[in-house]
Image (cartoon, rainbow, N blue to C red):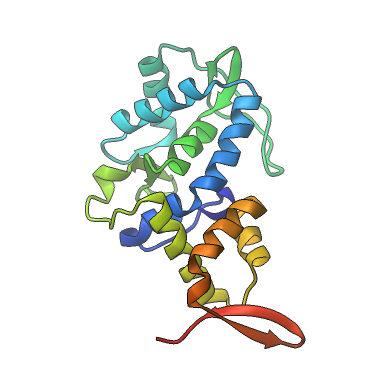
Length: 201
């Protein structure tokens, strides 16, 4: 969801947070493409994970299944992220070692997979359609508008810059979403700083 981190959100509203952050997710995908994984390969990985995760599976079970399905070899990844170190399961794709966690992340930000129930102290992942068949479906434009409304209900008064920072959207993208909701907004002066809230119904 927001800023690419794990969030606990109402299952019925998953699309608000995933589809609503699609522009932020696209920034992550651009980075992965620049790092050497073609977009077609990202699509293939996400599609394959969707097929494999018809039920919740822990990461250690996913790694060999994904390697076989993609026809690639497993390879240990030693580089960490967010200050982490140590070895983790990875796959060799396009000549590079990619962590299974990173590949799951790509599928999650596209809404193909999501976190499942914990099994002991292990996290699991599952195909979103299989795990949450009753979630309320939304298009990206619908989800973006509802995401902004949700944000303002929780954190308003706020500015478009606040919203961009929270979602990690580009400023221009955040302004475009904001403009669609602007007729519903009212300005509020907070210690000399103008922010906006949703108008009362």
